[in-house]
Length: 637
Image (cartoon, rainbow, N blue to C red; front, side):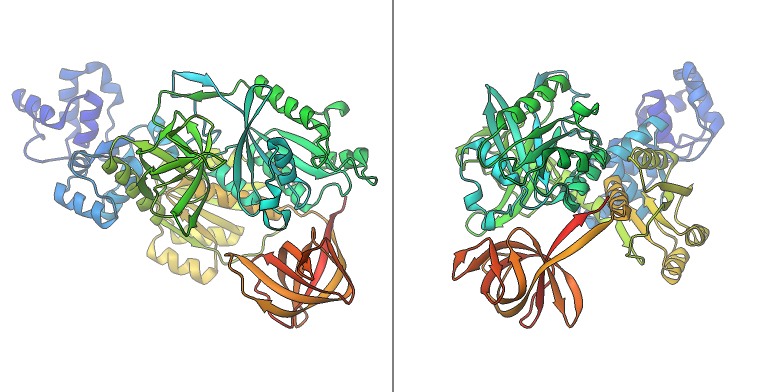
C-alpha cells in the first residue's frame, strides 16, 4: 500500500515510519520507496496501533487528505518536490513546499503528472468534493462556528419588469432610488439595509433571475426570503412564473406582494387565484404563502409587508458566525472609470476591514476602501452589511465568495488554486434547443465519493413537470462506450473531476453528444438547473400592441445600452413592455426598454404616426430599417 496512506492511518510522519521499520527489521521501507508490501504494513501496524488493523486497505491507491502541504503531496505521489512545485507554477499556483493546497488542486496536479489519487476515506471524499460547493444550503454557515449571533434577514425582491420592485425599495428607504435609475427600471443589482421597528433588514434588488440561480448553485444563496412583486392589475407574467420555479429549486420561502392595489382596475382575488395555479397558495386559503396587498407608490400596507418579513425571520431563528475568518458574497462587480474595480458584497461571516488581504474566486487583492450603500466611507463592515469595496484587480462573478486571509501570499495561493480548478472545464453543447419532457443524464466521476456527491446534489433539485433521469453512471475517465451509451439514451454526460479519453472525444464530436466537464460541482449543477427551467413549457400568448420602424441609431455612452429613433406605424409603444426586433421578416429577439422619450421628454406611450427616441438593453443589435414590435406576453392556464 502507499506509505503516505499508512502514515496517516498510524498518525506518524513518513520518516518516523521508516525509522521504526528499520528498528524492528520490517522490510519495504528503505530509501524513498512509496509502495509498502501489504505484509510489512500489517507488521508495523501490529506494533504501533493493532486496533487499526481492520482499517488497512490491501491496495496500491494513493489516498490524500482534504488538504496537505506541497512537500507531502510530492512524497505521497513519489515525485521530486521540484517537479511538483514546477507543475503547480505552470498551472498558476505559486506555492512553496511548506504551503498547503486543497485536495482538488492536488488531484489536478497529480493527474498532470500521470498519478491517480483518491480521497482518504468515503467521508473525506464527500468533504473534498464539496469544498468547491461551499455550502449548498446557505452561505451563512453556522455548522462550524461556536460563537453564533442573531443576524438580520436577507430579502431579495424579484418579479416582472415594471411590477414595482425598485419603487417598493424606494418607499421603504424613503429615498429617491428610482429617479437615479434609467427609465425607472433597475439597471444594476443593488443591496440596501434598512431599519424597521428597531430591527435591521437587508434587501437585494436583482434584475437578473439567472444570477439568483447562479448564486444558489454556487452555494451562495443569499436570500432567506423572496418578496415576489406581482401587479394586481396584470397578474402573473412569464418572469413571475420563472421566479416561482427558481424559488422551488432553491427552497426559498416566498412572500407575495400584490402591488398597485390603488389602481381602479386592480383585482386582488383574481391575481391570487392566478398565482395559486403555479403552486403558491395563500395562507387564508389553507396554503403557506403570505399574500400582502400593497401599493408601493402610495405606501399602502408596506408596514404589513415588513411585519411579515420580521415574523418569518423570528420563526427561522437566523444566526451568523463570528469566530471564523471574514467572508462575503459578491452581489455585483463592475469597473468605475475613476476608481477602478468596484465590488458590491454582502458580509456573510464575521467582518471585513480596510487593509484585509482577500481572495475572491480566481482573484486576490487587498481591501483599499469600504463604503456603505449611501456612499459613506467606513473602516469595517459587519455581518449582513451590504457594502461596496475597492481593491480587487479584476471584475469577479456574481455569487463568488470573498474570503479574508492572514497574508497576501495566502490570499494569492487560494486564488491561484481556484483559477486552476476553473481552468479544468470543458463544455461541448451540440443540441442547444431544450426538449420538452425528461432530461437524461449520464454521470462520470473520478471516485465513488465524487459520484455520490454529484448524484445526491442532483437528486435534491426539486422536479415537477420535468424529471431528471440518471440513465447511467460510472467511475473513471469518459470512454467510448460511455459516449455511445449517452448517444443511444439521448443523455448529456456530466463529467465531475475526471477527463475524457482521446478516442471518446473524437466520437463525442462525431455523434454530437453533449458533455459538461468540470472539477467544480456548482458549474454542473448550474447547468442542470437552467435546463430544468428551459424545459418547463408554459403556454403563453403574445399580443402585439404596436409596430414601429427604426429610422436612425445613435451612439450611447453607457455599456450595454442602445439608443435609436423611430416612428410608430400602427398601434402604440409602451414604456413598460418589451420590444421584439424584426429584420427582413425574421424575429431576431427581444429588447427591454430603459427609457422612452418624445420630443426629448420622458413618455409612457407613443401613438401611431408619432416619432420617438428610446434607449434599450439586450443582446440584439438594432439597425436602421429594422422594425420593432411592442409586445405583451400573457401566461395561459
